[in-house]
Image (cartoon, rainbow, N blue to C red; front, top):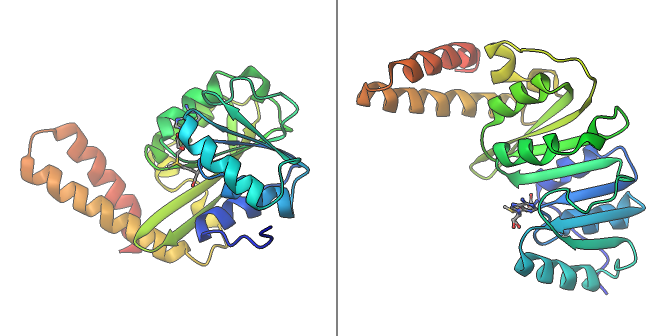
Length: 225
Ligand SMILES: C[S@@+](CC[C@H](N)C(=O)[O-])C[C@H]1O[C@@H](n2cnc3c(N)ncnc32)[C@H](O)[C@@H]1O
C-alpha cells in the first residue's frame, strides 16, 4: 500500500488552506487531493465527480493508498447528494461560472462555519464580484505559479453582507495581502496576460467597451509591469 503522496504546488496550497475536518472535494477527478487530506488532515472526505471515468480512477487510487474507510465517492453534479455535515467545500480546476452555480444553489452553505475553497480556471474577477453580491466574503487569497500557469485560490465564507465591489477589488481581490512566495511573479504575469489581451482587442478594434475595460484592468495591474 502506498503511503506518501506528493501533491503539485497548486493542490498543496489548497490543502494548506483547509481549516475544517469534514471536506467535500467537488470535481475530485483522480482524488489525489481527497487522499492527501484523508491521510494528513481530515477525518472524512466526500469526493464527487459528475463523470464515471474519473470516479473509477479515483476508486483505484483510494484503494492504493488504503483510505477507503475515510473517503466516500459520489457520482453527482456539484454538491447535490452531499451531506450538510460537510464543513469545507473545495472546488478546484473548474470554471468560475460552474462554481457559482454549484455554490449558489445550496442554501446550507449560507453559514459562517462553512469554508469554501475555490480555485477557478476562468472568470476569476466575476467570481469575486458574485461571491460578494451573494453575501459571501473572501477571507484570503493565495496565488500560485506552476510551470507556465498562474492559479488563484480563494477562501471564502458566508457573511450575509451583500457588497458591490470595485473593479480594483475584482481585479486584485485579496491577493496583495498574501504571503505567498509567488505573489510578485503572479501579478507580473497577470499584467503581461492582460496587456496581451488588450493588444489583441485593439488590433481588432471592434469591441470598444471591452477595450475600455481592459485598459482599466491593465492600469490597475501596471504597478507590476
Ligand atoms: C480539471 S478537473 C480538476 C480536478 C481536481 N479538482 C484538480 O483541481 O486537480 C475537473 C473535474 O471536475 C469534474 N466536473 C465537471 N463538472 C462537474 C460538476 N458539475 N460536478 C462535479 N464534478 C464536475 C470533471 O469531470 C473533472 O473530473
